[in-house]
Image 1 (spheres, helix red, strand yellow):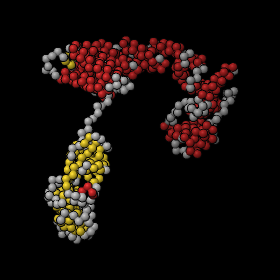
Image 2 (cartoon, one colour):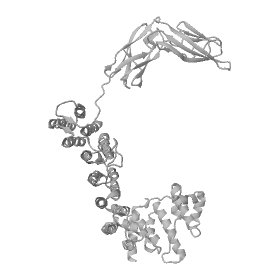
Image 3 (cartoon, helix red, strand yellow):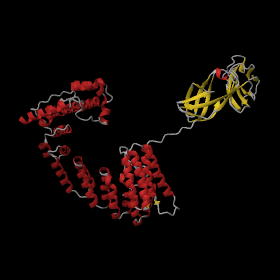
Image 4 (cartoon, helix red, strand yellow):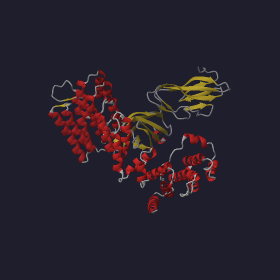
Amino acid sequence: MKKYYLSFIIIITISTNIISQNIWKLFSISEEDFQLVSSLGIDSLQNIIIKDKWDSDPLLYRQAAEYLLNYHSDTHTQFLLNNLNTVIDTTRTDMFSLLQWDKYFIDTYIKGILGDPSSMSRMDTIAQFCPKSNIKVAAIRKLAEAGYYDYWVYINSRKEDIDAKVVFFMYGEDQRYKSYVLNYLENQIQNIDPNDWSKIVEIAGNIGDLDSIREIEIIDNYFRSTTGETRKYYFDRLNIIDQVNQPYRSMWVIPLEPDEFLRSTYIPIMLEERTFLEAEGYYSPTWIHFMEEWLPNESSSLIKGHIEMNIIDFKPLKPDTISSIENNMDYTKSLIDTVYNYTWLGDQQFKDELQSILQSAQSNLQTGDSLACRVQVQAFQDLVDIVFNDSLNTDPRFVTIEGWKFLYWNAQYILDRLPEPPVVVTLSLEVINPAMSLVNPGAFSLEIKGTGFTTNSVVYFNGNARATTFVSDSTLNAQILSTDVSVAGNYPVWVTEVTTNSDTLTYRVVSTLPQPVRPVLECVRNNGDGTYTANFGYKNDNDVSVYIPIGNRNKFTPTPQDRGQTRIFLPGRKYRVFTVNFNGSNLVWTLNGRTSTASSNSAPCQ
């Protein structure tokens, strides 16, 4: 009784620390249970619980509670907390009471998932008094999941039972029992045939849950002491639990493995981008150097081709983004020594020169001059590239493909982290539309095409800034006033970007157009409903675009004058520029004194 009182005090203490939190994780309802209850209405599910259908159908009661928990907890949490309140009499041992323990466990478990703090003391009641071993073990497991380990003697006595064994392993998470559980597991492994790798991996996995380093040691020992396919199984497990050391295991086992197929499986396929299956170390100079040294000893032509492909295709991995630029530079400096020692880089003076350039770059970085640092790193990369590509040079300097990859790409990874040098914006004007008009055309929008435009760009017309709209880095629109073009003349147009001016183009205002702009009727389509559609184009014989606004010089008769015709006429012949619907009577487009007439008798459209 004293033990129960102390346990209850501990449970209450734990419970007050997890009020309103989910004590246990939500479990998913089985597909079979889902099919059985998903067709029932919410009211029916509630009634199953309220009317306590457990006595007549325990399975249906559990399914209803689980379904509401999984799919309607947002609206029925309080309902479940209020109604899953089975009361247990710990002194009764009749059949009815035995069944009630199952119900009491289900209620307690679900209430714990919903964060009810009383669930801990209820679960402890099950662990202490339940006469059914499977329910008792399940309750002890739930207490262990919540960090409460007070049933070691019971669990240890039943550790060979399937259900209790899982809980026994969980008790290893408590420092009081960790050594005992680990020793038990290791003794189990010693009695298993090393070729029964799946059983050993399973038990070692349980050890790994408590001591990951010990799991690695155990599996590594079996990897080194077995042969053939069994060894490969242990290698594959190590690729999951200790990937970082896999390249060294490959280097150890490849010379020992007589089977060509198995030997090939210890050499990954190295693409430009590493997959999660390969350790990072397979992209290191150490591994590449090993492959080069092993290549002449390899008897299989297929594996030789595999190795040669790796050497050609691999790309050094990018450093971790949390690594500082300075650390990346330190690593690249150390790479210079590595590739020199592997004879992937020739000439001591060349090696010293490369390290000196990187040291200068690092010094600039430390003083805050990242742009100067970038210049030096770029110089380093360029020099490596030049020497690598200059195979005809007779000086002692050289860089092999392996040395080039490690030095060039690690320099690139540094450059990717450094700020880009400021871009020198060159403002250039290519064309303005329109570029010419008759006197007094009124206000209009001028389109400027060029390069280097930004939101700060301002268009100047005859020395005066005009309202400018940024469209893109190659297009601006400017609002030209009617007073700007009220007198014939040549007016300069340019763009200003802060303190930089572009080149200048000329807008011409003339009393008479140098060359004609002719309206052209292309064809007329009969719409079949008493209406017709005229297709119009034009021909501008001037070498620049011309602006002719709607009015006496650009109109349709009969009215309305504006029927959607163009106002800016580009140089040359333009076909089917716009269409006009009309009734078949004469429709005349007048353009700067020239006319083109459409009617129902005009050439039909093909």
